[in-house]
Structure formats: C-alpha cells, structure tokens
Image (tube, rainbow, N blue to C red; front, side, top):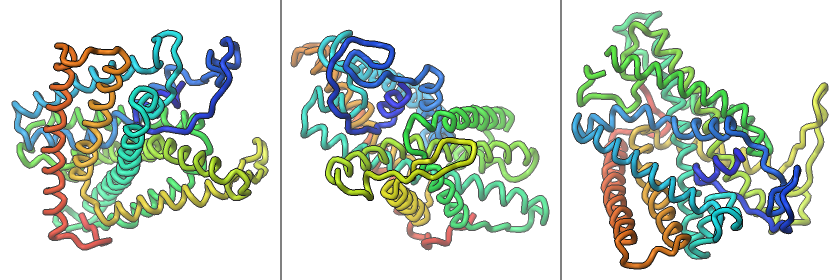
Length: 398
C-alpha cells in the first residue's frame, strides 16, 4: 500500500483502529482492514519524491567540506548503513511470525509492537520534529530556486554587473499559499498523482545537476554552494538552470505534502478520538463541483492544516539557511529513526541473544552512527549560529 510504504519511510504515522480478523478477500486483508489499494508505481513515486529531495542539492557542498577522499567514502558508507537498516526494518513489518503475524501498517505501529509504549512516545516526538522540520526545509529550498530564476531573468535583462538583489520572503509566502490549497486534499492516498509528477521532476533536476556538474563538476572546489543549482552562476546555459530550478519547485510542492500528510492524519484522528461529538471536528460540508463528485470540506481540517502551513512558512522566513537546516534535520533524524529503532526492533523480533556476536555487532553499528550524528549536528548548529550573526529576520536577500 502506498500509504504504508511512504509513512514507514518518511516516519509518518496514524492511529489505527482495531479490525476483526477474517480470511483475506477481495475487499479485506487477512487482519480485517480494507484492502490496500497502492501499487508498486504509487509506492515508488512517494518514496522517490522523498528520497531524491532537496538534500541532493547540498551533496556537493557536503562533499566539499569533507574533501574528495572522505566525502565520497562517507556517502557510500552511509548508503550501505541506510540500506542495511532498511532491511532490518522490513523484517519487522509483521509482529511475531513473518508470514502470518500482525501487520504493522506504520513505522510507529512497529515500534509500539516491538519496543513498547515509552520508546513509542520518544519515537513519536522525533517523528513530529523530523516531519515538521522537513517541510520547513522544503519551503526554504523552493524559495531559493524561485529566487534563482528571478535573478537569472534580471541578469539577462540588466546585465551581469547589476547586483539584482532578490528577497526570499515573497516567494516563501507564495509557496505557502500553494501548500495551503493542496493541504486540503483529504487523504494521503489521493496525492499519488502529485507524487508521480514530483518524482519526474526529481529525476529532471538531478539529471541536469549531474550533467552540469560533469561539464563544469570540480571547478567549485571547496567553494561548492549549499544549493548546487544556484552555484553555476546565472550565465549560459541559463535556460537549462532555470528549467532545473522550476523542476525543483514543482517537486518540492509535492514533497511537502508527502511529509505533511501523515502528520495531518495523526492530529485529525487524535482530535476525532478526544472530541467525537464535536461538529467542527467530525462534520463534513459537501461542496458541489460541477462535473465531479462533491468535495467534502471539513472545517477543522481547513483551520488546522492552514495554521500548520503558515507556521512552517514563518519559521522558514526566520531561518532561511538551507544547507545548515538540512544538516540539522539529517543529523537529528538519522540515528534514531534510521539506525537505532530498526536495530532494536530487529533484535526484539528475532530474539537475538544478548552479548552474542551479532548483538555486539549491531550495537557497535548503532553507537558509531550516534557519534557521527552528534558531530554532524554540532557542525550544522555552529553553521546556523554563524549565519545568525549577520542575519536580519524577514530580510533575506540573494
């Protein structure tokens, strides 16, 4: 199911009710829940939209900080660690028997089933922070790309000697306005089309960035920009860079929803549990749309989701430091969500004996990743502190 694949990968979660067990059928799974409707294509679209995200644009900058030897080595090392831990996580899809055990439809369900309530709450807090922080990072990245397009146009109209200063605030407001509209899509599975478009855009700007890197790759040296596609200057081929930046904006519009929708669902389902009699929370207003089925407008959804988008937009205006924000999010979320919880769940699920060679190896891997995450977070926080020394709120200029 696409919702399961995306929410597990992106650390989103929902509250699931209890369904009576029954034999699998055309409409129900073996645990009584409605049949999953996602396909390989929709799940892949959600995952690609999130994985090939704005962080790709900061890889050149990250490599430049570490050097040509350490940079690629660390990249390959963490790719392997992520893949290995993803395999451990996949083995925890069912609790107990790997074939007939209870399905864990979300990351949070798997943590709760294997590790219990306390770690479940800790994981939930980290997930909230990571989901929210990612939407803030995407708002910043989208505004940077829109500013790059604006400056490119300015340079070609007024000449390269013109400073062509551009403020990021209007572009963040514009991006936030689009997200408020898209946030009213009721359910996660209804944004499959948006993820597919975003996935195509991901490949588009990644390919352009790679091509330009090869044609222009090593000239940046240790001055590689935080956003790769804003570092080729605003000269020829300016049209190609503009296409890449447009693709980034379109991709991030969809990626924002992929990360925000699981959080939207959790808050709304929690509100329904606590306020089942509230018409504000539970009542849908059917808005007729000519030629289509009526749109179900929920006032709580309209208010809460709009407030969330406004909040992330305002925070993005206050901290518009793309590479450092991405670094903090990556460091904060990598160890617990990608390494620690999958390892601990796997140990519990497979009953790995304590102090066995496998148990020791897994703990060493977890500890090593923790140390690296702490160091990475410290570096990114130091970068934000340096940026804040010369920064004036709501007056971001490039």
